[in-house]
Each structure stands twice: as structure tokens, then as C-alpha cells.
Length: 514
Image (cartoon, rainbow, N blue to C red):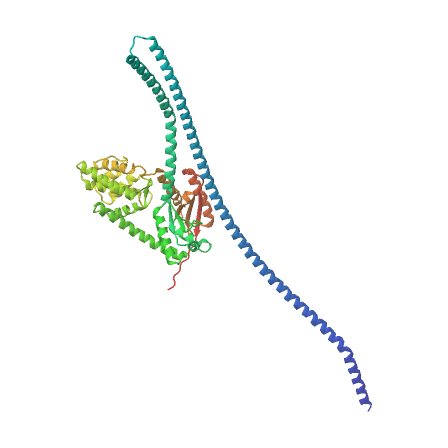
């Protein structure tokens, strides 16, 4: 019985003790759970803040890039406006100068008219004075008849009028001698400047017309990759500006311009414009141009009745179609010279066929595949000799600029007919030939350095693009190369303004899926 009572008392104390400690322990667990929840909430909060900050920075970078692009577009627009403003200012200055010249001419005419009026008044006064003198003398001489007196008066007036007229004529002639030489020089210089400018544009620019301006965006491509690929493949400068429905192709080599024009035509018609497609089309067009050159050479030889030419000479004749000499188309000049040679040889009793053959081939030295150092007449002589032309034909080609001795009568005929064809008024423009030679010299200087693959002179010779092999020159060496080329151009050439040298090094990796 006592044991049972003891157990009951222990149980009662255990229950009491458990009830007293349970709330405190529960409260501790709640505090611990709350702290853990707060820590997790703080971690989630920090993650969300980082995500928001990252999105904000990305958005900010995108906005800054867009603002930068718009600023660049605005800057380009401002540059175009400035260029137009300068052009307008130049035209305004030219108009003002012409206005001043017209004003000075008007003033000079007014002065001459005033001088004429004064001289007429003087003549009138002198005539009246002479009449008075004659009347007085007639009155004193009573023994003369009326007819005799009238004859003496008329003779005296004639002599006086002749003297005055001769003096006036001498004054006019002296004034004309003083001003005519200066005025003639001014007119000639102004005419040469205007005609030479038009000829340079005609020989260095081709305009490719498009149906709408939406094509321009596709020609440029994303970040300009299409237009860069087209310029690199053709060696020309593609100018896409705000000219309506037109893309300008600039370059001194007419063959390159024609390749660029035909390539653009095929790309725009096809609609697929991307770098790989551009290279494919340009390669195809180059092949077409080569075939057309051969066809032109064959057709020219048939038209002139010149047979038995070597295929390489026929190809060089075809290349003349895309070459100008002093602004004159070389193929038309050669055909004209050939016909003149045949006519002159027939009049002199010589062989007209030989003369025509020599006249057609006399300028083949101007269209070589490489750029020789020798004059074109001597180089043409070497080409003709290489392709088994007869000795008298070769001599006529080499001697038509007197750079070698003339050995046959055909040689002076070719020389004279070449001069006749080139001496027609407006046939040639020497400034264009010098301009094209300067551009070729720029490209040749760059090509003389090792590692250079291609060179293109663009922007009328104000920029030279040099493409180097990635396996031959490193990135550090490209900077040194551009400086060396710039120094050599500066030391060896004469040119207006400055020339920008851009060295391009690109790496290409090509694979084929089969």
C-alpha cells in the first residue's frame, strides 16, 4: 500500500514538472523558427535585388548602345550637311566671281562707249572747225569756181577723217593687244578645268540605278558586312548615300567597276545578299567579263579584217574596251588609228593590211596583266615579238613614240595616224591619265611589301586599302606595315591632301559539309 502511494506521488510530481517546462521549450522553438524564416526571407530578398540590378544594368547598356548609334547617325548626317554646305559655298563663290567678271566687263564696255562718244564729239568739233577754216579760205580766194572750191574742201575733209580714223583704230588695236592675251588665257584655263572635271568623273564613277531605296539596306547588310565583302571582292568603293534610287560605284579601273555593277545587278535581282553569295557572284561575273573581253577582241579583228592574231593578242585588244588613254577610249582610238593607217598606206602605195594591223596593235602595251616599268610602246613591241608578229609590225609598234629607231615605212604612218586620232579637239584629257597613273603607283607601292595579298586605291586616291595574309603577318606587324607604306608614299609620290593607309588582316576558316 505504501509503495502504491509513493508511485502515485512520483507520477503527480512528474506531471507537474512536465507541464511547467513544456511552454518554455515551445517558446524557444518558436523563436528559433522565426529567426530561420527571417534569414531565408533576407536571402530571397537579396537574390531578387541582384536580379533587378542585373536587369537594370543590361537595360542601361542597351539604351547606351542605342544612344551611341543614334549619335553616330546624327554625326554622319551633320557631316553630310557640312559637305553640302561647303559645296554650296564654293558654288556661291564661283557665282560671285563670275558676277564680278561680268560687272568688270560691263564697266569696261561702258568706258569704251564713253570714249567713243568723246571721240565723236571731238570729230564733230574738228569738222566744224575745218568747215569754218575752209569757208574763210574760200572767201579769201575769189578766183576759184564753186566746183573747184567744193573739190578742195572734200579732199581736205577726207584727209582729216582718214587721219582721225587711223588714230582711233591704232588706239583700239593697242588696247586689244594688252587685254587679249590675258583674257584668252583665262577662258582656256576655265574651259580646261570644267571639261577635265567632267572627264574624271566619267572615268572613275559608275551609277547603279535601283527601283527603291529599300535595296540600299540589304546591300549594306548587318553592321555593313555585305558592302565590305563587295568592296573587298571587287576592289571598288561602293557609295550608298541619300542619292535617290542610285548606288555609286567608284574606282579608277573600269573593269573592276563593270564587275561590281554586274554583280550588284545579279545580287539585287536574286535577292540573296550575304558575303558568301557575294563572293560567288563576283567570281562568276569575272568569268563572264573575261569571256566578253575575248569576244570583243575577236569581233574587232573580224570587223577590221585583221586575221591570224595570237589568242593572247586578241584578249589584249578586248581589254582595250575597258581602258581609257587621256580620257579617250583605247579600243575606239586603236580602231580609228588602224583605219587611218590603212587609208594613208593605200595612198602611198604601201600594203594597207599591214598598216591596219600595226595601227590596231600599236597600244597593246597599255593593257598588260602586270604593271611593267618600261614605256608602253617598247612593252608592246616585246609582246608583239613574243606572239610571233612580223618584224615590220613589231618595229611600227615600238617606234610610234620614237623610243626606238624606225626601220620601215609603216612605222611613221602609225606614228602620224596615232597623233591624228589623239589630236582631235576634245579627244584626250591628260589630267585623267596622270590621275589613273597615280592610283596605280599607290597600289604598286603597297604590293611591293611581303605578305600583301591585294591592294585597292579608293576615294579618288585618298585611301589605300591593303589586304595581307593572316598566316604571313601578325597583328603587331600590320601597324608597322601601314607606317612603312605611308612613309614610302610620302617620299616617292606627289599628291594633293593626304592618303589614308588601311591594312586589313582577316582569318578565314573553310569547311565543306558532304
